[in-house]
Picture 1 (cartoon, one colour):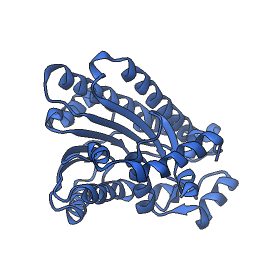
Picture 2 (tube, rainbow, N blue to C red; picture 1 turned 45 degrees about the vertical axis):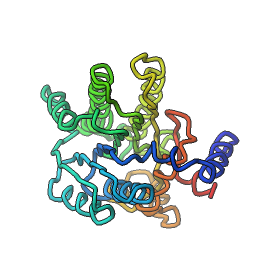
Picture 3 (cartoon, one colour; picture 1 turned 120 degrees about the vertical axis):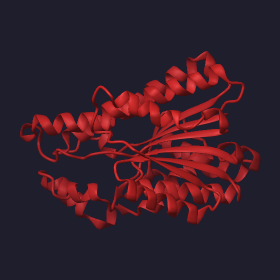
Length: 303
């Protein structure tokens, strides 16, 4: 862990004790909206469940609304019901959206999802990007044009459009309504692959780095936006660690022997629920710089 991270997480540990209930309640208010992209299973489901647990700790009867976005409606319903088991007062809606299909109508489909809820009705709004695709899992010279295009569309093009339309909707709300969310957080699931080159994950590594940069640009733009001066907006890139998910199974079959070996080393694994819980812990501490890339292992080391 570098010196900056050490200071950040030391401050997080101190702040977790010193922060008042009122301050934490601003981040986890009674009326909050969580827009979760990639909510069908795996880490996305863990994010939703751990969010419900976090709100329950702060407010027993929070009117927490989840907008679950993904491809499989049945699995998203399972996620929604799992959330309600943790927090009875939580509610959810399901929106089918394939983020790999970025056609001329994609923007309209995204706008329809964001228009389904009035941002002005909530004190906090969270946009969480969890969807992703690790293919092509081969050296770049062996990657097909089709797989490269699909990876960029699913992991970055749709990600950029979703953020653009979310911010457009948010600024419309802030400009036209006396009621507005006091807290806005944009969280994207990043990866160590966005910081370090992983042979045989060429496009995945590249798009993760690009997503991190987009979060930095969004943070810089919103800091200078006059309409957002009374709104606490921050972005966070969370690297969840090596998770036992379908994506990791694909990495274990990638072309590079060293990456395969690392992905097969179970000592590196982090439970999805543990990583999601630590992500919400970082959100609650609120000591991270906007647009910071935070790795789960740095948080684990700081505990």
